[in-house]
Image (cartoon, rainbow, N blue to C red; front, side, top):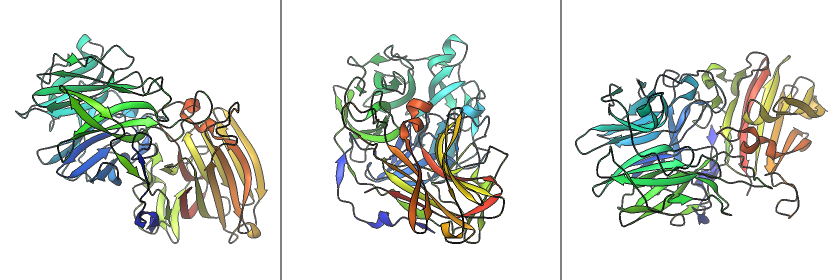
Length: 512
């Protein structure tokens, strides 16, 4: 049973969408579409499987995950399984009573973009067609009034018309280009023009790009043309949206996707991060999804960050793994959860993998301050782990074996045991059970000038005799994107480094 009791509580407090993500946590590269009064949004997921989480909303500020688009390995090959590989920027659209989703699997790169479709955004989604001759990333799909389909993407091809922002007409069902790619507008000259999206409005075709890289220089630029193929005229005041070189609490803003609302207005979903701590600032939840209003002036879009108010979210949950199917929030980096988990009496059976490569069952961290607890039942010779991670080389964990509990940190090549405690009957509910806990809170001296603080403090704990025993407290900066690199954010999850064990319960509590 999954208990989302907080979802039933009225939370009247709101905050500006300029500073508050509508989908907090590691949900980057949002792509959005509308069907009647319903909005649907999907995000990148990189190496994590199932891939491409998809959400539904009626008001653009309250979103509920309804599934994952890529739920079968026939849709999303594991490939090289590398951190920050997998599913990159994508586009979600609805055309002729069907949803379409086009993406790139960077862990199985080289064969072209993947295109899937479904009658219901919650799935099931088709197996993909692979679009040959489209080496690159960030594909967009759009249709004109005659029904012609246009694929626009960031080309990595060796040919002159196969690199940069390129476009070609497409047969979407066959996954075949109908013409050679051609170059379209390449942006304003900022680094890394990418994330193209093409829209039609009032006789104009608009090409929106991300530029400046998905770091502090991130920006949104726009151009327009009378045809989807161009030539495109750039906005005279590009970039039209950016937080670069500002003191805004949300940084890296960009990679926007526009949607016309049910009442005829327009809005944009975009990504941003919330850095904390001293220079350069550390963001730990990855790139998150934000919403802005769009106004039109003389035929050009302008971003209105404060148009929407975001209600206080409800991210806490408890899971005793009673159903036969895992909740859609559970993911695994580079692995299919079905390959190492199985329903068990009183919980979920988790098996270990190769030595040093235990598969991880995880969920995205959604909050800046929170506590996660896992209750395990393990047998002789087994060990279990509750871990907070960004990738295979950057994680903190509490581990328990038959006789001992350890606090462990992995930072790059450095692996360190930070504290230990004996484990026995008095240290758990029974001889076979152990309860481990990780908590994140504000960094000591946060906000005080002159203090070298990270984004937060991570506590690694054992719950023993009804009380929490802290084995280690760690600076959270070492589990930030600024240190680890890559495109993902923190997840918290469980694994079994040796043997097998049952996780009986998992609790995630957001701090009030």
